[in-house]
Length: 267
Image (cartoon, rainbow, N blue to C red; front, side, top):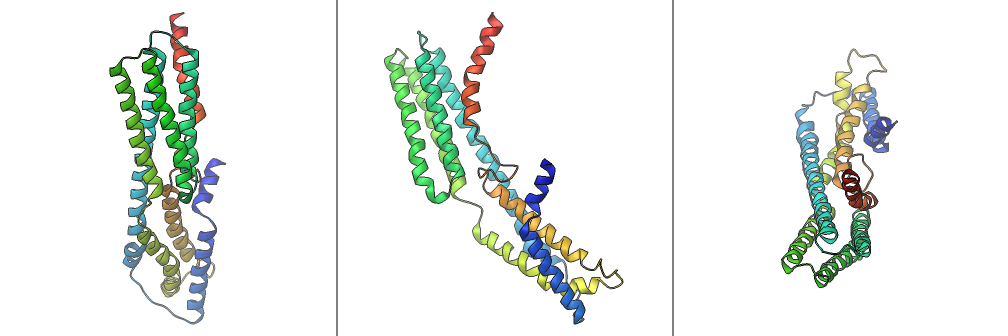
């Protein structure tokens, strides 16, 4: 079922519409005997190359977002360990507070990156409110006896988390070149129509029902590549199967899971 769903992410209403235009153009060319042997290099130059370039660029953006997301989680976990292990006295309230702050930070990031770019300032304020709470938390730990050098290290962790957040924000805010996308979209619509004479010429000797297989496949392949690029464009919109999922609840749950395994091993 999941694989079937993936197919429908690639073949959608746009594929059907473009295929219909290609079939209509081919039928008209056959009806009026308009035939031509166009070079297929135009397709590679006008559509295939720009789309493949965009797919590669979008994939790199997704991988970069994954790396920065991992950095936020790793340094957040380091601050959690500092709150749990670096102070002489244990405090369940302190552990509960840092879990709440980190959980709220990731939830705020998730809401921001799943939202619209136009709503970015509203969500960004909430994210930096969490960073501010994290900074104040480190300051309170110093008052509880954490050495200045260790506090400085925790602040460095927070600084790296902010750098990673800003990098992901820019990935969310700035997409692949829009002019290149507009260029490929224009030719995806235009070429199946203009290549009607080519399909009519190639249909010589084919069965009348097989004549339209070529324009349909032509449209499905081109639109399918464009849909792949579109799903990779925003790695946080949770529409495609390759999106980055920010699971704040699981992250908070796993913070204390490691401590439980250690205790069990000691017992």
